[in-house]
Image (cartoon, rainbow, N blue to C red):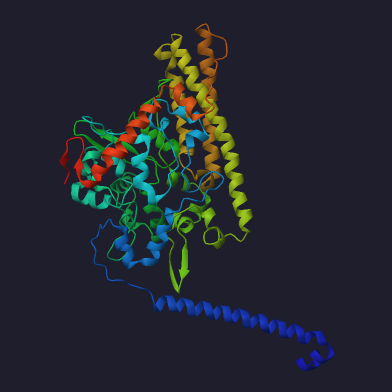
Length: 501
């Protein structure tokens, strides 16, 4: 057997091979040693501050004094420059992009104003400024229940503790509006004593109970999604008119799918509003991000919301969760590429392809639904009776509920593209069946011509068509922002001119 020296002597190139192999081995051993040293440094120098503020401290800045890295990353959510093909954190006027939505929501506040939220940093400002929340005027109470604040501020855990669940849900904005001053933040998700994740919204706790699950037994990884699910879910207000209370409820009793939630609403005979054109009893999906996510591949593989939207990062030997909550497409290296080894451009393009294909079918569905509402209105105008319209209106309700379940969750086409496509396909089938029934009904009423469609190719035209006085609505909102909101923040109720606290 030849020695190494003899092999090198007989094959001069073998020495170079051995040399290169040695260099590579030393390099990787060095990387391993560096990683070990870094992890040991993290373990040794983990910062455990002495917490002096109360459990429900709403001021994020005070938490930031103890956790400067996390707070520093959270402040980056103030940046609204990023915009992807469809979403991002910029303020996007969704009605301008899809004027059909104005007609689909005729008679409901979303037809007035619907913008993509700019993120947690602007949660309080955005809800106060949107036209959907209306504006209290002299001698007129605020139209908005306190329940609307539930997911908008880190003040809420403390207010629920002070007022009690029923007390918090009772009354309208002038009762507690002046106390909602901090954006979504630390107290919403963390226990101040040990920084453990916690659930602070009673609606999620009760939803788990109604579905037979024990919230105390969920894993830490699941909690990294459930703290998000306190707000990024479908919900409704269960009104107790006699007591003036609007309870926040997650309709999870039958399950999380679009059909199971629909069954829940049908069983309690619930509707959000009656459509102004078709007179159909409608359902408005809020933002069922968690429900759709639970049907996707990432959830089935144990990937949490935080893994993608709040990935771990290292800084100065410290590993911590990035609280710059944003689209993973603006942070591909720390989110997607932790698991996926493809190039950044390819990963982003894969997402866009899914979004574009689903959006194409969604637009087809929107146009079908607009025709359903307009043809139903025509049937009423020509003398259709309620018993003739009953199945038609139920079909419109079900088709639009499925559309809204998809449209209201901005990340649905990525979170679960297969389920999202299934829902849209089902809605297209339902809407098509409705139009066949309407054609037969209109024919029986002596009308065989095609219904002429209005020009609604812009938000302004669509709003004018359904009868919205946008000039008046904007003036009322401007009065609220300029004259009433500053007094609220100073602790004065401008409707009574009395001290609020």
